[in-house]
Length: 569
Ligand code: ARG
Image (cartoon, rainbow, N blue to C red; front, side):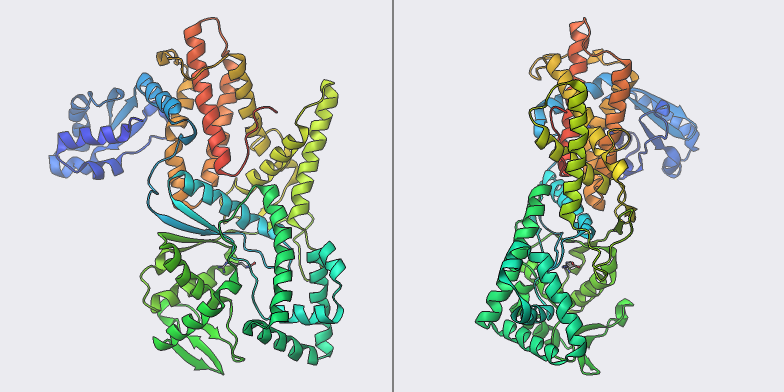
């Protein structure tokens, strides 16, 4: 596509002798389109040109009239305002739509760069609950966005499959476990065992010693301990995978915390040899005063390592394994301090890539019926929430069938696509750091800023294209696109790549969610005011091509968020 901004910057550079890149950074977007599509403040030229900004604007406007893709250049006070030529915009954008197809909005800025994105990471033998929805869905969207920009992404599920609690699990299982019950309903049964042993251990200290023994056996690779642990892990993972299938989410690696057992020993040795460990009441800690952070425990007084130590080993492993450009952790904001400490330690260890480890935090999600608390046993399983969304959409679709007196041939698939899509959309609609309350009515509404609304708009465009017999291979006279809303839609198409780039830079998928929602709104307004399938063939073809481009953009945008775009709704 034509780069209008760059053209303006080159024109300015030619006239002023200043650096084009620098000038480009100074070009603004006016608050109102009526003032132009781009504006350049001339203050910054006052020194070199020894004139007042107003006079400079006056002087330059004629010299810049020939910038490619502009219809006019206006001097307004200390500003040069540039108006993009509609036909040049339409031609450039719609050529790209046809040429790039599925890749519209992509670029190659990530080429040759490896990025690790870690997300979801539930704990085995523990519920996969509504609280995990955020990391899971945000992480998956980031993976898709990074891939669209050409990065090699390794999607990692850092399972919580290690820790002293597995000693307790084994002991509890040996005492009270029932294979059949566990196989039938793994996680709730394992949780029950865990709760029971914790309770009993308050009275019976012997259980704690027994559990410790089991954990130490597990660490040493004792056959029975390992095979029980492996079983807990397998049944848990099977449960998790059912949820990932529902969500259409995949990982490249399920290397959990347990994978880093030996590497952790090496990491601790390395920390020690670099003289970073000091003793503190029997524990081994690292002082992080230099980074204004509280000291971090590396080895507890009973000799066991902790979560943080495992993350140090993990980061080093990932650098060696993937030679990452970025190592991204999509983990809740409760762990901000944890990741600050991790990075500080990596820096003290002398790793210059420590700053390439990026924590992407997010706020809390709660349900209208109140936040869940594991301790009170009030767990809301993510799978139940997803199935409920699907069921609710199914009810809506059934009502529609009744009203229309005809059956849909794909109601089940559609209920899934819309139900899951709605949940993901709500999750990705706001800045991630904000807390939010899961709202069933808003999520599933077909109106307003929701997933179903955008999906529905997409399906509507699709049927319009079919009805019009649209064929992207036919040449089109784009000068027929003269309406204000047509120009707005073309602008949206033009800006799509930049919004994806911005979204990846800030790791904020909501940029895309809002962008496609805005585009859907503009389209619906346009469609309400403007007939598309008109007599005049040339006008019809031009409008259909525009609709095709917007439909494509919305589908790609939804897909980047992990949301499907059904053709018919
Ligand atoms: N399993 C942890 C939890 O459920 C999240 C793991 C986050 N990732 C990490 N590398 N520490 O809280």
